[in-house]
Length: 151
Image (cartoon, rainbow, N blue to C red; front, top):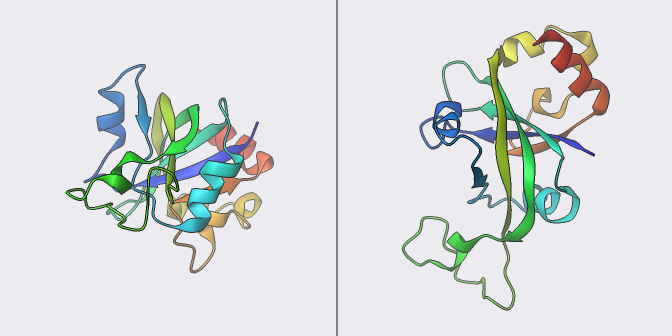
């Protein structure tokens, strides 16, 4: 099992939106970064654990825990010319973009990025690194355990 952090802008899809869909999986669609795509396509498996993270907001941080509930498959938005994530280079026979599905396990208290930065145990966490803009990053098992202990 692996651990991940997945960012969502709350004005697009918030933890409250997620919680309004109890026991339902959501497709993590619209990712258009090759490294994030490769994490989903090549490394994520059913049962992997995910920190759901609000980004691009007043208080960015971890807002919940989810689990990967369906492995990677082609992101349908790439084929829809009316969708903002349409990719004219993608074809059904050669899709460029993939998504996984995740299911909410629980909402948590906000663990803001400023709080995460306070802990020396998390100093190497990818989301805290200068210049990191990836929407999906791996989380080290020790980092996962530490955050779970402070929830």
